[in-house]
Length: 467
Image (tube, rainbow, N blue to C red; front, side, top):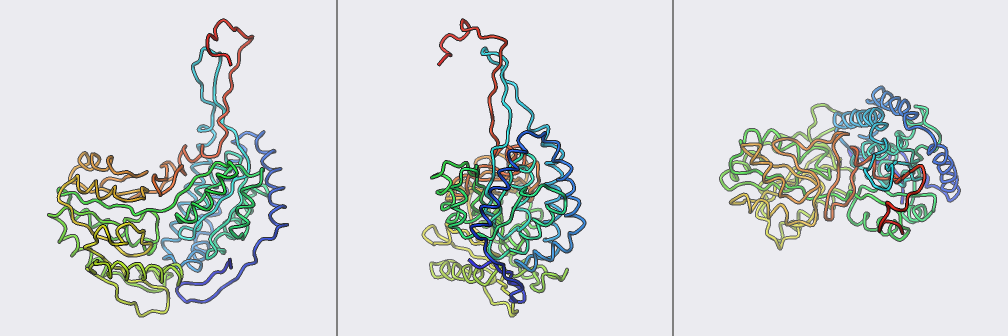
C-alpha cells in the first residue's frame, strides 16, 4: 500500500513515504525487545517525567501538529487542535496515575500472603486508523509506555504525516529509543510482526474487516488483542425529552469530524410525539452548515478524508434510496473541489434496507420513529454493533433506565459522548472487545502475576488445594 498525504481539500499530493524493509522490522524488534527487558526491572514512576514532557511538547506545538492533521485527512483545524490537547490530557493522566493503578493487589487466602503484581509483557503491535491520527495512538501509547511495553505503530496509509509527527514528539521528549517506532507496513508485514515471539499483544482500531484479519493473525499466534471496530450508535430521544436541549447536541454528534467517528450518533431513534419537529429542526441545522477550507475558522463542514471514502458513502446512500429510504434533507452535490459530502438525512429505512444495518462513515443521519421506550430499546439493540450511544429524557433517572438496557460498551444520558482518559472506551458485539483508557486500558497488556508467600510450608492447611 502507498503511504501518501493527499490533502482532501485541495486534492494535492503533498508527500509520499517509502515502505519499511525487512531489515527495518528486524532492527525495530531487536531494539524494542532489549528495551522491554530493561524496562521490566525499572520502577513505573521512572517514566512519568517523560510522559509529562510529551504532553508539554504537544501543547507547545499544537498549531503545527493540528495543521498536519488537516493536510493528512481534512479535519477542521479547530477540531485538530482539540485532538492535540486531548492527547496531552491523556499523557498527563497516565503519567500522574499509573504508579498507583499498577500497585499490587492483596488477596485474602488460606494459602498464605497472596497478591497480584502487574508486569509488562513485551512489544505491542498497534494498528491505528486515520480519523483521529494522534488520539488513536495516544490511547494505546500512554498506558503502555507507563506499563513498560514498547510499541510498533502501523498507521493508516493516508495519515503518514501524523504518524511521523507523533513519533518525533516522543523522541524529542527524551523517551528511550524503541518506546514507539512508526513503520510504514503492509498487512502481510503486520502479520509477520504479530507472529514474532517478541511481540506479546495487538491493539487495533479500524474496520470490522480489518479487525477480523488482524484478530485472526493474533489468535493463530496466541497473542492477546484488543479491537475497536466502529458502530452504528443510537441517539435515543424519549417522549419526555426537552427538544431544545436535544438540539444543542444532535447536529454536532453527527457532523463532528465530518461524521467520520466510530462513536458518532448515526441512528436517531425519536419518540413519535417529537419526531416531525426533530426532523425539521435537524434539517434546518444541517442547512446552516458551511463547507469550505478546514483551516478557516468560519468553516463548519469539513471535507471527507479521501475520494475513496466519499465514493463509498455516496454508493451507500444511493443504495439506501433505491431500497426505499427517503431523503428528508441533503444529498445534493457541493460545488467545491475537495472531497465534500453534503450533510444528509434519511428516513423511512426499513429492516430489509441495507442501510438499516450498515455503518455510514460520514455526515449522514438516519432517523427512525418509535412509539414507546421498549420500541426504542429494541431498535437500538437490533444491530450487530454495540459501541456507544446517547439517550435524552426529561429526567436523568428515566434516561438511565433506558440507557442501561442498550447493548453497548458506553452510554451517555442527556449529554455529549465524552472521551476522557479516566473513562474506559470500547464496545461489544461486532464493535470489538477490550477497553482502552482508564485503569481498564492500563491493564490491557499486563501480566497479572500471582505471588503467594509463606515462611515455611504447612500442608495441613491445604486440604483439597494441593495439586
